[in-house]
Length: 192
Ligand code: B4P
Image (cartoon, rainbow, N blue to C red; front, side, top):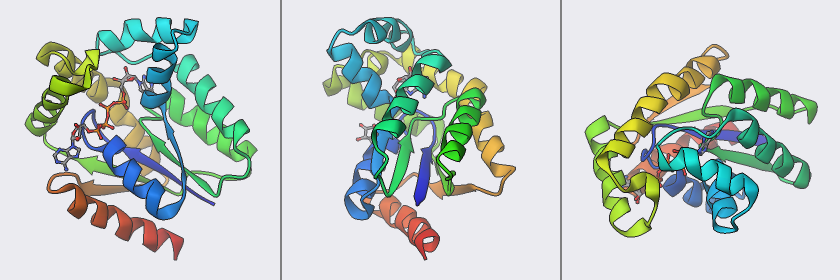
């Protein structure tokens, strides 16, 4: 079983590259961003609560996203592997994920970290905000707040996995196709 975390700041291309990876390698995509947006679209109590945080560029509370991932892992016992996109975003989430996977006698194979300079992240997110309708891409203030949240709360997740020798940095600037080639090389090395 291969379990990947696609890691990086907001706008680094996690969602974009996940779509390519699931198509080529048949892994199951678990994106907490997508799961939260569908809860919001369905106007569930969880979605209504999450929206307050997302609108402000803040992370949604750990217990909410950990609960969502736990449910999805239990619902897919036949999966040949998972790609975690946008999760874990705090060390508490990382420790919870490690525990959930170890209960299923598996673990994280590798963390692929997309490295993109900050000015490029801001440009991409504001560009997407022109058409996406996403409240968290709509203003430079909110976009910058998401990047601050990333530095304060999410960057330590990379250190958590680096301790176990699981972190691989990948250049996340360039064309979507070139970045996908770099990621594919890492995944194929892993699959042997
Ligand atoms: P996400 O949905 O995970 O949003 P993201 O970080 O903006 O996405 P991503 O990095 O995937 O960017 P993308 O590929 O789309 O989270 C949204 C919010 O939900 C969070 O801020 C938080 O509030 C909440 N949340 C989610 N997970 C959570 C968790 N675990 N804990 C707590 N809260 C959580 O790329 C961005 C843009 O760049 C796109 O328009 C794309 O077309 C473009 N792009 C991609 N690659 C490019 C390239 N190579 N060149 C040029 N443009 C490129």
